[in-house]
Length: 224
Ligand SMILES: C[S@@+](CC[C@H](N)C(=O)[O-])C[C@H]1O[C@@H](n2cnc3c(N)ncnc32)[C@H](O)[C@@H]1O
Image: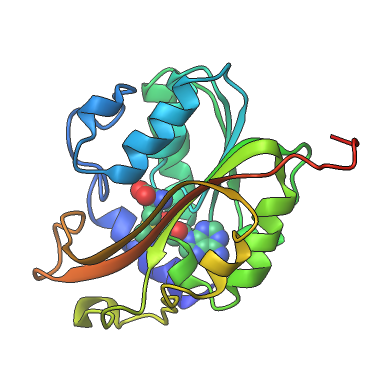
């Protein structure tokens, strides 16, 4: 078991809801998520098209996955923490939706079919080789499909409460932004020194983020 897996197992065991403690967590109305640029952008995009197939990478307790399932999307979730994966299954039943949960490292995951939407929220700063995972996400995406990626940037130092496991923030113009160069951007936002609201169990601290949402181009050689 990796240090990251142990860290998140302990976090998810520590309370009923580690992330998304607000009552409106599963609202599919983008206007209900004014403090989360990623959530409202994903919802606005997803609601503009017929429901397709979505993948939530590092789904934690499954809030993004369950929200998309409530919108009628066919959702799969990949989560490294066994405690997290078990909670996604329980919370999905409580929300009366279906999410296919894979307890796996994303680097070991092979999809049966590609996805129209891939969410990777807060995960890539735990993975050193981001280029490989970006390539994997891009290959798993249909043409015209979307990837929504959020990770810590090197604009600010990793705050002390997080230095208990290895982390790998990316430069603002680093591997992740570079990997999505040819993709059509829906959002590319560099959030600097944002006060963290998600951890109820840590001292006050701030993070800097890269938030990137982009659509996969259609091939121009006629093969679609
Ligand atoms: C900061 S949490 C974010 C959880 C969720 N995406 C959210 O926004 O509520 C990061 C999650 O990524 C998972 N994770 C980290 N590395 C992973 C990997 N290599 N494969 C799959 N999941 C991973 C962790 O277990 C943890 O649940």
